[in-house]
Amino acid sequence: MLELADVLEAEDRVSDVARHTPLDYSHTFSDLTGAEVHLKLECFQRTGSFKIRGAANRIRTLSDEEADAGVVTASAGNHAQGVALAASRSGVDAKVVMPETAPISKIKATRSYGAEVVLHGVDYDAAQERAHELESQEGRTYVHAFDDERVMAGQGTIGLEILDHLPEVETVVVPIGGGGLISGISTAIKARSPDTRVVGVQAEGASTVAQSLRKGSPEAIDSVDTIADGIAVRRVGEQTFPVIRERVDDVVTVTDDEIASALTMLLERGKTLVEGAGAVPLAALLEGKFVYEKDEVIVPALCGGNIDLNLLTTVITRGLVASGRYIKIRTVLKDRPGALDDLIEVLSDARANIYAIQHDRTNRDIAMNAAEVELDLETRGEDHVEDLLDRLRERGYDVEVLV
Image 1 (cartoon, helix red, strand yellow):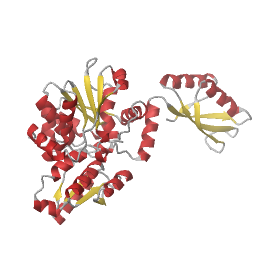
Image 2 (tube, one colour):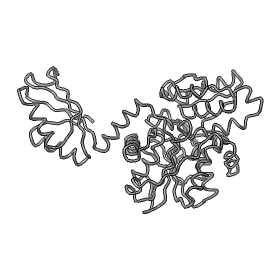
Image 3 (spheres, rainbow, N blue to C red):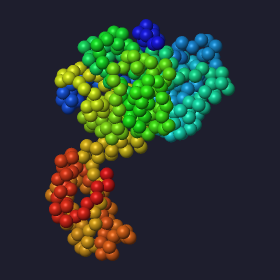
């Protein structure tokens, strides 16, 4: 099993490739949670993700013959970029298989680091199957995204950095996909600070570890469905699972709405952009998914910042909806002069800001003398939304909340 010595060796190998990322105290999230929150900003890492650490450690342990033959890997995006850059820095040819659904930004970034990109399948597991075919056909070394002790050891260097910066840390919160990151971090943390708690967080739509722990062995799920594409894995690793079972104190899950809310709060209050997988540790903390004491020193590891701009738009909208900052409603008006003005007056009096209005007289589901209206509104929170809806209904409007 992975040990501290492996992580210490990895620290030497990756020190000239991976950045030493900041660990910043957050007044905002400390005030919101009652804990002492320090954010491990691994989203500022080279390539925008922690994956460069594990990839560099694995590639620098290749034999001369393996290096000459090149490497191949499968990834949803972050590991792809890590392998591409680490291979380029070591003069090793790299081929990366990515799902056809991978964000365009991650595909372009991977190519920019010098790797050949092959698009295949609908998710990570399908891409992995194709990568193993290329491994056999071309004699390349497969660099696993998580289920490899040298990759796990590279990721564990984050744990060393956390303890170097903040030896008094009481809880470290880490996202889990296949388990490589949390295996490495928990190995470093538990070896040097046994009383420090390690909490893992998965997206509810990809909760492979939570299910595997309940059953006592690695279990696969049929499909994944989450905005956190960086941890959208159907099966925990064979090598990572025993480490998680032995060294991780708790594993919890968060919903996509909770992830979106944490992501938008990081943007608005923390001035920090992360991807979905990077937001899950903070989401778990903000939503009270695990128990902690007042003033407990907690470090959420924000593991990546590579988010597709189209997804970011959707995530921000969902985060605003979840926090009561945005609402879309539908109602029906009498088709007469001034009807729309009357509706707008109610919204104005309630201090709602109108983003968009759609006014439709052609809908066959309404009366001939009526018009359907949909409105996108900016609101100030859940209480404001309830007040707004109450005012509309008191004035006789039959309101349907769309989002």
